[in-house]
Length: 346
Image: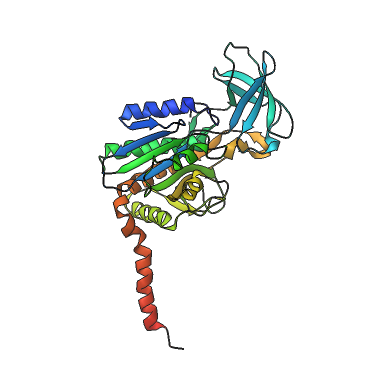
């Protein structure tokens, strides 16, 4: 989270993710579009479990230079118009030059931005000048919880699986440019990089909505604003979560639609993959706080820990996928047999 990123400018986050992979001996490679695929294959016969997260966060792309200290920039990502108030502090990158948001130009999200210091390196993109990372009790604050928390959870899951020497076939897809239309995820979904029988799980932070509560555990996301995800895959995560709750003290999980936005799960599902999703509740979604203020996003650290626990258990038990997803149909058939005995003839 200390690495600023915007759509198409994820290089620093990607480099940090790859450094973590090197540190823990995880094999990875970049595809032709710069997405990172991290593979842990210790159970060759196991069905593939894919953890999908994205490297970017809404930000500004520099369009052209206007003067020695002023640039024309386009904002990319979902932030309502009322939040773009002139004078908001920015960070221009590379170089970390401080700057300020200027006037909007036209109907598109095009703005003047001005550097408050002159540095030799011209900027390529800009982000809000906010805390990169702050931990306060159980709460993680930062400019880009979305979706660097998902990236961290995917890597943590693979690290835990490797430490436990579990027989798994797990892939983390760390995709680029999600905030402008799932560009990285679509490129991966349309390639041959993933086995067609993979179970894909989208990892996200998602705006807290009624029905779920921050601090009450990872959320099994049954759908997003656009799609309802695969019933069997969702049922599998619910079964895994139910078993884990019995065995692991303190583990919590919830279930919710989470219709605040559309996630990469929709992209993978539309390309034919069996898809489910998990998320943690997010405060200040896309840095949008009350009264049209730009502030740090925040999540519960314990929720993130519960996400990793759920994913680790799901990867370890993927060989039981069919058995676990057939529990409900078998129970309903037993109930049907009883119903036929008990229902009076009419």
